[in-house]
Image (tube, rainbow, N blue to C red; front, side):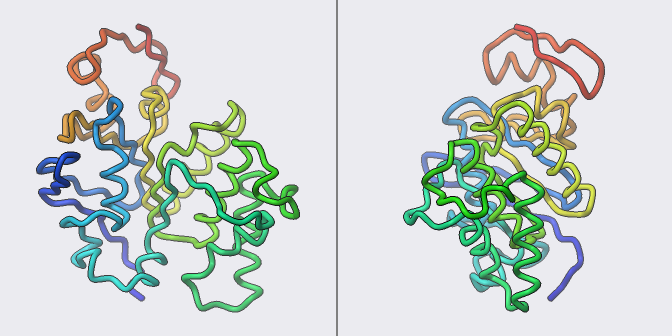
Length: 246
C-alpha cells in the first residue's frame, strides 16, 4: 500500500440542491475545520470527501469512487453526526469493529482497539453495553471505533457536540496530535472559537458554495463572519485563546 501523504481533493463538486461547484484540496498533516450556518452544506461536503456522495473527489491522483471499499476504509475514517448502533454491543466489541478493514493479527487488532479506548477515556467503559451510555460517552466510543482503524484521514461531523468541557478539550488535543503525526483531520464544527483556536485551516460554506478557505484568521475574519452569518462580531483575546464577542 502506498504510504505517501496524499491530498483529499474535491474538484468542482456539485451535489444537486446542496453543493455547487465547490473546489478544495485538503492536506494531510493539517487540522481542517468546516464551518458555516445551518444548511450550508457542511455535512454533505464531509460525506462527499468520505466517498458517500457521488462526485469528483480524489485521494492523491486516485478517484475515490474507484477505490475498493476495504482500501477506502483503510484510508478514510468517517464519523457521522448521528450514529446509533442497532445492537447493544459492548463498548470493546464495538470499537474492535473499527479493525474490520484490516487483515492483521488478533493481537495487533486488540492493541489498536485498546489504544483508541484509552486515548478517548473509554477504557473503563469496555464491558458496558453501548445503549447504556450517556450521549457524551457514546460519542467518544463511536469516535474510538474510527480511530481504532488507524486511518490516514479522519473525517468527523460535529464530534464535540455532546461532550463536556474537559472531554472536548482532551479530544481537540488528540486531534491536534493526530494531525501533527501526519494524519489529515477534517472536522465539522459550529463553534467558531474552536475553529479559530485549534484549526490550521478553515473552510467556510454558505448556501452550498465556498465562501472562504484559508488560515483561521483569514477565513474567519470579522468581515467574513458578518457576510456569511449576518452577525457583527469581534474577536478578542490572544492568539490560540481567542473569543468571539457579539
